[in-house]
Image (cartoon, rainbow, N blue to C red; front, side, top):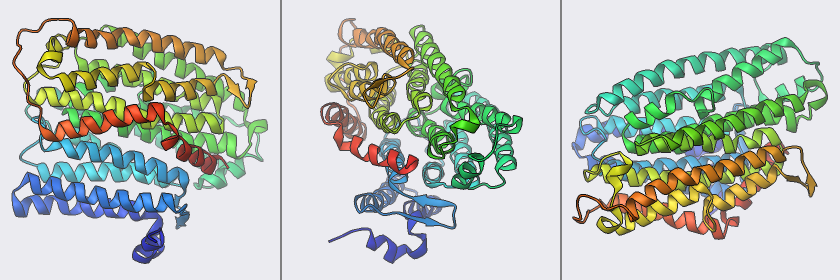
Length: 496
C-alpha cells in the first residue's frame, strides 16, 4: 500500500517540506525549459507536471496522517496539509489557463511560470510555518513574486499602474508587519509561535504587546484586503492579467488569513492566555473590522460597471465573512472559515476564469458586454450564473453551505447562544445585498439582448478549468463533508 513512507524515503529529514521542495525545483527549471524549447506548451506541461507531483505527495501525507517538523521552523500537520492543498488547487487552475489566455506574457513565459510556482511556494511556507521568521519570509516570497506577475501584462498600461500601487502599499504592509513581529519578539523573547504563546500566558498586558497586535492587524489587513486596508485590490485585480487576478483573489489573500490564524488564534485560544491579554477586546476589534469590511465591499460593488472591479469588491466582502473566525475564535468557526476558503477558490476562481475566457475571445470587461451571452455561449453563461449565485449564498450551492457553517458559528457555540448574533445578522444582510449586483450580471446574460448573436468558441483549457470549478461548487454544496471533515481535523491540529 502506498503511504507517506515513500515521502520520508525520498526526502528524509526534509519530508515535512516535500511539497514545497518540488515546487521550488519547478520554479528554478521553468526559465531553462523555455530557453531550451522556445515552446510555451512545453513549459505549461512541465509546470502542470510539477504541481501534480507536489499535489500527489501532499495528498499521500494528508491521507496517512503524517506529522513532522524541520528545524523548529516548519511543521507539517493536518492544518498545513489542508492549506497546502488549497494553494495547489489555485496554482493548478492558474497554470491550466495561462497558455490559452490572451493576457499572459508571450516573451517571458518561462519566467511567468517560475514566478507562479515561487509565489505558491511562499504561500505553502506560511501554511507550514511554526516560527515568525518563516511566516514573514513566506508572506514576502508570495508578495514580491505577485508584484512582478501583475506587472507582466505589458500590453496594458493599467498593469504598470496596478503593479506600482501594489508595490507601494505592499511595502507599507511589510513595514507594519515586520515592526509588529519584532515587537512581539521583544515581548516574548522568542520567534517560535508555540513558545510565544507559552511566554505570553504568564505575562500581563503591556503597551509593547498592544502595539504589536495593532501593527500586525494592519499589516496582514493589507494582505487580505480588509477595510480600511483594501484600496489596492480593485486596481490590481483590474490591471492584472485575469489568471493572475484569480491567483491573487483566491490564493494570495489566504496567506494573510493563515498568518492571522497561526499567530492570533494560537496566542489567544491555544495558549489560553485570555486572563492576561483581554481576548474579548481583541475579538471585538476583529468583529468590527469584519462587519465594516463585508459592508463596504458589498455596497461599493453595487456601483461597479467593470466586472473585474465588481469581483474585487466582492472579494473584499468575502474577506469580511472569513474574519468572523477571528471574532468567534472557536474550533468550529476555524473549520467553517477554512471550508469557506475552499468554496471561495471554486466559486470566485470560476468567476474569474469565465471573465478571462471571455476576454481571450474578445468580449470586454464591462457588465454590459455580457448582454445576450446565454445565447452565444450557453455553458459559460450557465457556469457564471452558478458561480455568482454561490457567492451570494443561494442553496444548494457550495457558497450557501459554507456560509451556513460560518454564520452559525457566530450564533451557537456547543448549543449555547453566543454574543456574536449581531455579527451573523450583519453577514446575512450583506449576503442579501450582494445578490443585487450578482443578478445584474445574470440579467445581462439571460434577459438583455446583445449586439451580436454569433456563437463564441471558448478555448478548451478554460472550458475544462471552469467545468472543474463548477463540479466542486455543486458537490461541496450537497456533500460538504468531502472537505469539511479535513477542515475540522485541521482546526483541531492548530488549536489543540
